[in-house]
Image 1 (tube, rainbow, N blue to C red):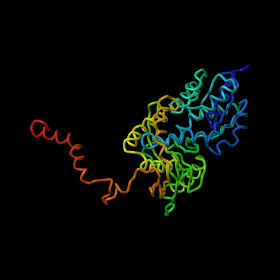
Image 2: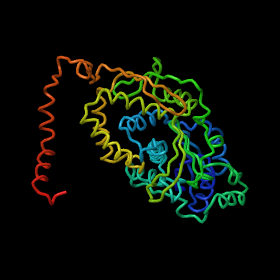
Image 3: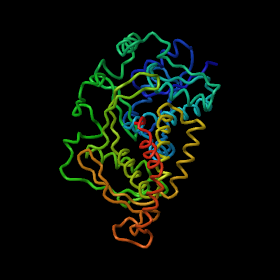
Image 4: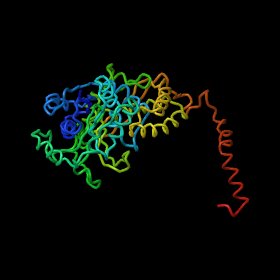
Length: 404
């Protein structure tokens, strides 16, 4: 019986080449697996393409709700943003994809999992760390680190020599990754950081802010314990809400990010990300936390979010530290229940009010009008104690002229 290899299959150029390459170099049965995380029409026609190029079967596995509920929302609750810009769209999708690959490999009795990530990118790390964490006995095959193919032109020539139609032509498009959370763009003129992106040609989920409507759009999002449950008063699951917010945000030019980021492997890369619905959810959730979290917890959570983002970006989802950080975040979300209203206008997300029964804002204390809970005279003693170290140091400097 031939060895079985499970291939992470997208139907793009790389994975189209990988199927015949695996059969020629490993004399194996190739089981193609496309894991649906909301990439839409990209899945159309995949079965015929996979079987015609030599796969024995194709699994199309829809894990969209799992992706949003178990990976995206916890990352949003953590406030995780990589390098202050990137909302981690591709990063979050790789662990659930790899997890499903492992499950099918075990089900099929496969000995290996193969992916089409390049040796320069982040995805090889994300896929392989997940496999190592969930099924260390499974071998990983990464063709881009083995074969002689060096470019898209080489890949197309490889297919032409075997009379296999290429799914794309030379240089006709950006390198893109789509899921329900976002759409990323790399390549072509974006490889020069000095070039302004041609948004009219580039954008697919959004319009540029200049082309957004002249009138603002209002949205109202309700959360229960940090989880989004209603949009504009209508109950819906998170994936449905995200679809709706993507459309609303896209029309208003929301969530377009141009970043030169630091990859896991050490190099910098430039990409443009569209995350219209995700940007809105992040903003709404943050407004509710401002209202409901105490000062120390919010401050500590803000520092934790940086590490959380680094773990997600690096593919370290299935690690003890990420799980521990999530446990902390979960504890902070117990009072993040309420409603947030936002105004969307030409790429901007503007707070327009938030309410919660767990709000820590107390008008009697915060108002300029003196209330029962706050005595202005108490401030003098507080300032004296709070400023004591400064006063002592100033006295020391006065007594010692050599201290600047």
